Image 1 (cartoon, one colour):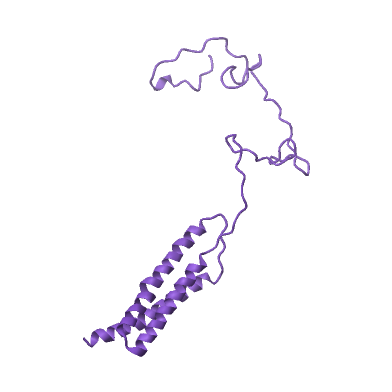
Image 2: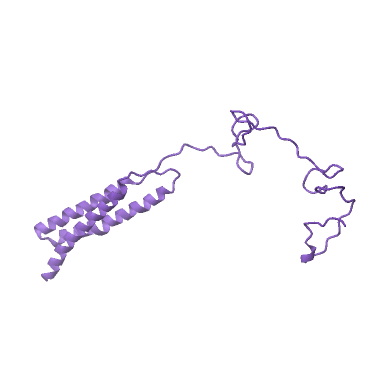
Length: 189
């Protein structure tokens, strides 16, 4: 009985294929023809021998080519590899954090001035700076920092997480002082 063809899908529909013509191969092994080199009369073919790849210390090393130089001048699909530039270390946008902290501190100062002077306009300005503007700057910092964290090398100082809470603390104090003055003014109406 001739060996079955593993690529015969005629049982699953489509047009039937004609059985292979020609003499069956003698012995075991892959049939001749197809994708490989022609087989010998016995049906076996041996692949050509590649020279041994040796690294700088001698012995087989798959990462070094025949000449002893490191392999890697080509991409996986045969094209030349693009030269890789130097890696740059990216960090958080500290200027945005400093701006958020400065705005929050300015909001606290305006809140204190509004308490001393009793001015509702200064209180509104302090609330606006300590609230939406400072927290918006902190959110802008968070978005920019998240984008920078996707770079290949990222390094942030250890104090950065604490600075985030400091900005939020100053914002809360500035909002509270200003809101207190605004509430006192609204209560007198």
